[in-house]
Each structure stands twice: as structure tokens, then as C-alpha cells.
Length: 70
Image (cartoon, rainbow, N blue to C red):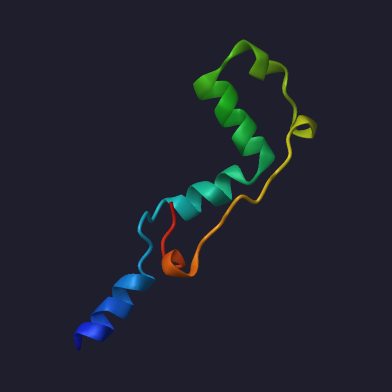
């Protein structure tokens, strides 16, 4: 395998393999809300409902980093 092929293969590997999973899980309002209430549990959070939440796609990846996730 040439150096170029190795670099291309490495570029296809996700930098943080769990990021995509977390993104998928937390894109479901109920999952995110349950997590916030259980593990952060600030008083004001307890009154939140799914209707209070809005999913915002904030992903921005430049051409240089199109194979990496943060």
C-alpha cells in the first residue's frame, strides 16, 4: 500500500468515532431532554418539554476537515 493510499484510508476514519452516535441520539428531543434532566438536573430544566426545544443543525465543516467530526 502506497503512502497516498494509507493517507486516503486514514482520512476516511472518523476522528472521534462516538460523535456521530451522540449526534444521532441527541437529535431526538426526548433523549436530549431526558439526559439534561437526569444528569444536569437544574431546577429550571425540570419544566422543559419537547415543545420548548428546537433542533438546530449547527454542523459546519470546511473542505479541509470534511472527514473529521468534533
